[in-house]
Image 1: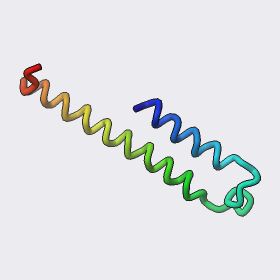
Image 2: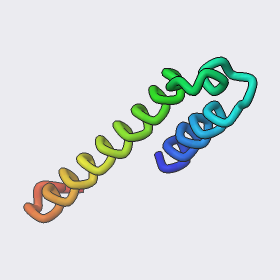
Image 3: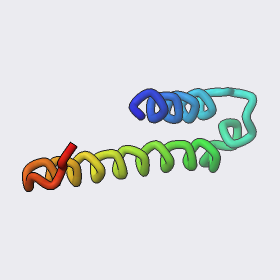
Image 4: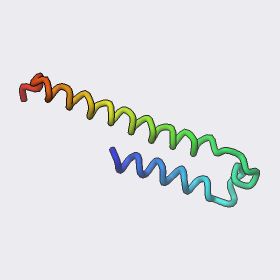
Length: 65
């Protein structure tokens, strides 16, 4: 997942630096870049929550595998 998060954030960064983009020229937010960042953050949040739940399961001995 870290690779996907990295790629989403990197693509967002690249979009915001392209001088020919209208949003860059007008100093406006890039909605797609914002969406890429939001997706990356949500993936990180959900991954952290999954990791937390797996730790709880293992601590409570509920994982029989």
